[in-house]
Image 1 (cartoon, rainbow, N blue to C red):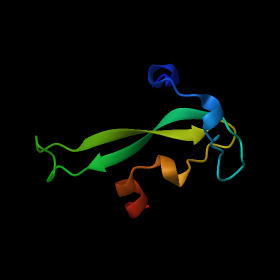
Image 2: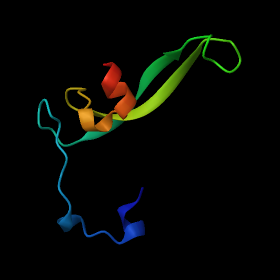
Image 3: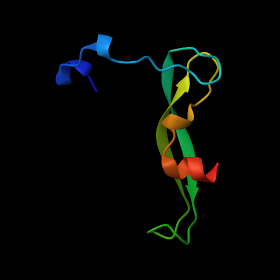
Image 4: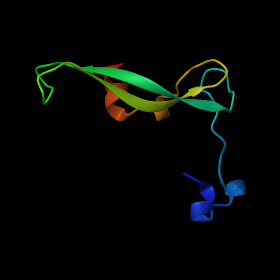
Length: 74
């Protein structure tokens, strides 16, 4: 989302850093989850991509970027 759409003053925000190496640049990556055929609506196994942000330097994904459900199962 573009911060300009909300008229946000970026000086009023706090930078986010990697919890592991403290780098402040991130790239969007996909966390993959498997869905059992027994739970799938079409009876076929499925892969479900979930977009998260990983550190551009070390690849670490901060816990705050993970969906709550993924945090509980990891």
